[in-house]
Image 1 (cartoon, one colour):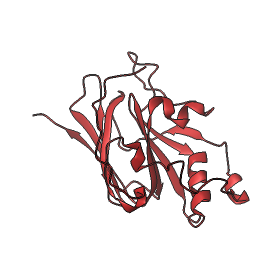
Image 2 (tube, helix red, strand yellow):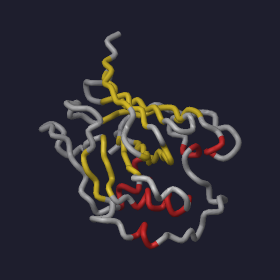
Image 3 (cartoon, one colour):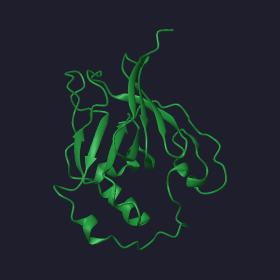
Image 4 (cartoon, helix red, strand yellow):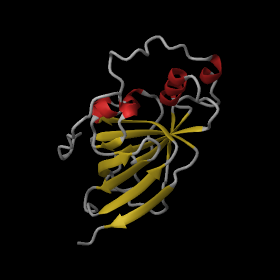
Length: 195
């Protein structure tokens, strides 16, 4: 299933992603390692593998109460090296309604095209919208408990396992934003653009 999505290509500066904070607009080079990066065969410490509860348990996350029971059509934002500011816009009649989220203490973020997203490979059921017209659509804000994606980042870094990391997801019709943060979301608000 695919929906129209505007072309969000932006210039990617030279250097490693961690050395060039700035905007992202689905430029996966900003948030992914290349095959040339020296991270192969990173050993995963035993204490990371012994997570409590089922691995990759996907739960409904509600950044705000009473959000529309609609999918998102767009997510974009900016990253300053620690904070990720995101605007997520609803689809299907609510195109002028957005959720603004500010993630603080961001260790990692990644944007995936719908068919490249690892969420498609996990066994956990995804929460659905409570909308009789859209019963097969997934709720657009998710939390992944005992995330293998977070465990991979911890193992690769080697010095960040002391935090209570959260894996939050913003899901649109054709893109997925994964965010790894220490602690809670700093702020969330709803914006209605009335023009």
